[in-house]
Image (cartoon, rainbow, N blue to C red; front, side, top):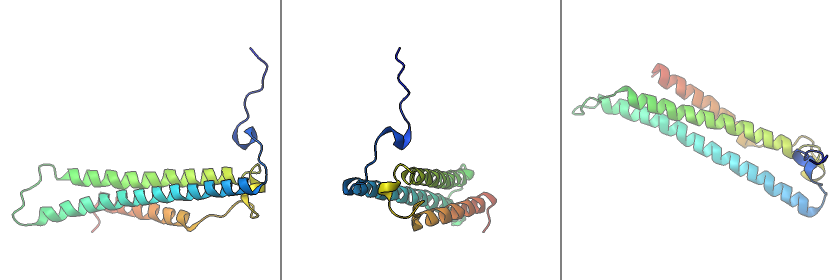
Length: 148
């Protein structure tokens, strides 16, 4: 056994030098975080919209003349609720991850290369994500309670 200290965690495990190269690397990483978050927002929006559309489609289909009654009429509602719930859950997790990564990127170790504004700047993507969480919750409740 050796008496070596455990490896450092986080930004302390390497030296951050304030150079143009490291600043641009930080910016590329920051933009990558934005792209990833926006991808999650698009995916969650599709899940919420598709779940709501499935419920509406099969509700309208059941009201049409000449269409046989469904064997399991609740199945489309349950599938729609599952998709809406998955979309809301994806948004919640992605918002949490986005904020966690930004907090790490604006930590004191990276501040020399991060920029002049302490604490960083949030983008409109986070606001859109939060609004979509609220819309998803309203859609989930509306389908669950069958609010017209």
